Image (cartoon, rainbow, N blue to C red; front, side, top):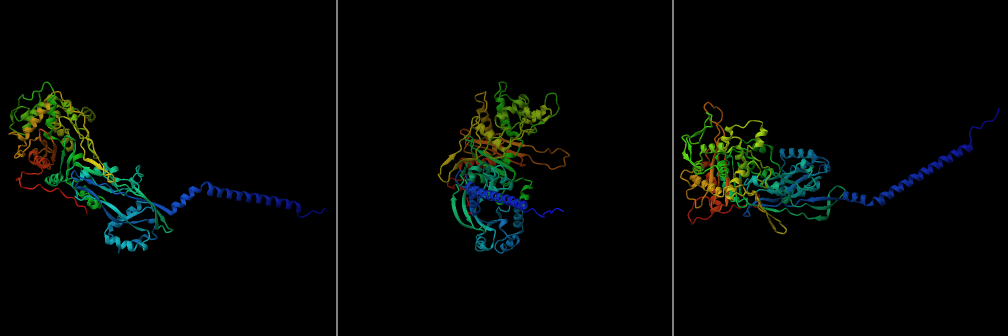
Length: 626
């Protein structure tokens, strides 16, 4: 039997050598790969990882610039900034949030609403982002927190500038207000532009001039230790403060108008017809914008939002009103451009009018009628029958075309956001409505009723165009911007729209003379404001009926809106004004006295007639501290 060896030494040695060689090769390759990787990281990516390491040690912190001031035309401060201490928390640096809040309670007054708001903001922000716990600490609270800051891990104390409106709700719809930037705004398309800012303009010039007011953000590079505490500031780039805004609005004139409205729903707009400067812009009732800066309480906001008088509504830009008889001068201007219209031709007013082949009566405001009237008397006494006839003769297309020439149905272009167009029954609108247009609708449109809605700003802009010889100027709230560094003022250049078409040379002069009779004439509807006036006024009253008090009607009866528009002095107009007081009855009684008071103040320096030795009222002084 042959001898078979149990193992082959030479084969095992060869196998071992092969495996050892393979292991050595793999080891060498792994070492070479490791060296190559280290070389790549240390040489090729050296600058990249150096930057990352530096970023872990150095934290860039934005420095918010001071927001620009807002001042009236005389330098009265309407919007200011003052320093406040803010308590903030960075969630991912807090070991135990409940324990931190427990430590803070003896130091800072924290109510249930503060804690609810804080928890809501925690859910909206990322863990590494700072979240405001209290936005406005008193000096004593700030001092207590500063002393105990070493044992309040994750809490920070910041000094910030807070927006403040020293005159409260004065001109709030023109100035607007700022509020905290929301999460959607932080993450929106313009997030990079607002990085580092805490507040953003919401309405008024605070919003439309946000870019000028916000300034330019600054930064500081802060070295942090392992626990995330700031050690030292390595680099600082100073911020640039925002530009100051000078408004065309007169604060004292604004205050007078608001006081005369006495929080009744309504609106007042006063313009300089030569430049379009907005001298006064009032939407009533007014409200205090200061609670909005750091977030108004839900209960307080609900009270404003549900108020039936609508204080949050900007009636100047968004209030849509039937113009009533204030629209008649514009229809008269349209008729004066035709060859068939004769302003001195008399028309009989028996107190009613009916269309041919119709028995429906359209009544005049004066039940017994006014007898024989021409254009001057029709405007002076606001004869409805005269303008019923004129509307039927002209037709709706011609009437609306001239209304658009005066800016109705279009935005005026004012430097405030959210302006409405109003409603003028043009051909396109009638076609889009899908309903037939009846002659009776043309008739009632001729006295400012029906499907015709205007804003108070449009009404003031249109009467200013009459005062300015047919030239409309774009309304401007802001007069100019002031650079706080160079102290250079850049004034807003007035912008004129194309002239209103005029086919008869003296038609505008005749219309102005007729409108002057509204105040100066023996039967003028606004003759009650003419007593003692040392200057001439041209105007037109209006009463817009809101609800019919027909027999058997059991609902709520709403009084008509009172309207008045005017400009003065007639020879060289310096102010054009429109006043609307909701549910106040006749324009001559409710709206015209407000217009007279503001025109008196602007032209004479006082509201009422006074003895020569009486001093002029002092200008409203702005508070510089809250």
